[in-house]
Image 1: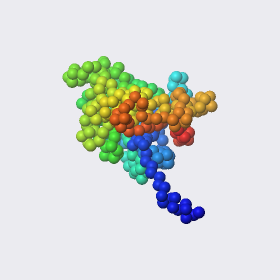
Image 2: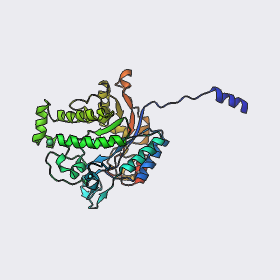
Image 3: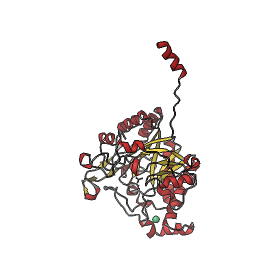
Image 4: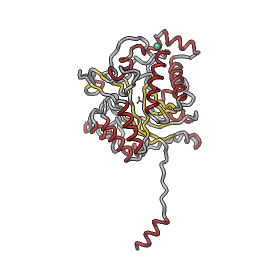
Length: 352
Ligand code: ACM
Ligand code: ZN
């Protein structure tokens, strides 16, 4: 009867809460740029699926996408490239069309507010010391050679990275200061992945920093770089998170780690009592194929169907109960080398 149903409703309560604090989705807006209106739609999807963190990958070799008032060339020059790759990167084919775009600080405030209304925290990523070619195209003095280079057209990992000299730290601290004023997130993502040491090995200034600070080698220099940035970010009351390469040469004292090259980085960080977000390529890279490549739009590779993603358990079995507490949660990453329109983003993100 209706009466009996009412009583049931009163007696039987459902208590529900998310298991993980960090339920993230990432979007790369550097390889391809997505307009503000679509980023809002993406945030709507995250809210619909009860995700609470949007990791916004804002700077990379192929484009700098965030207005920084103190360094206008970052977007005047760094937000534009003179061509893009066609087909798979192994084909080495390019067009010569000017491509780019960026978000003004007003756009960013609007998006952060939009996300907050939907209980989503926006975590910005400012890549350092690698994946910095667009910044160096705008300000060549930030590299080891000082040579003029262009914003990257192709996908990959590039040798011209930030040179760890005082001028570079002043620049990065200025940039991060503006970023921290804009973004209220507890964490600021500082990248840290895929930084070749080619230039550092041949740079007088880099070698003198290694010597002066008693560092072992270029991995030690990467660790020094991240620690110095961490100290600054911590001084502003925020924490850093970085890709698992920040473990190399020793983790900065308060850094959280995003484990992407498998789960080993996450295990190692948790054992060292550092917080971790699990994003292993095997389960969390949504630029991978989700069907037979011949039936799918061109992608980077891999095979990550929805069943695999859904079955993923973020806590590695190698961790004890007390170590498991350091796993903040998991995140899906959407790199966009092969994804250049909103419909394709939706196709790759959903339903995974
Ligand atoms: C990454 O996929 N390079 C973090
Ligand atoms: Zn250098």
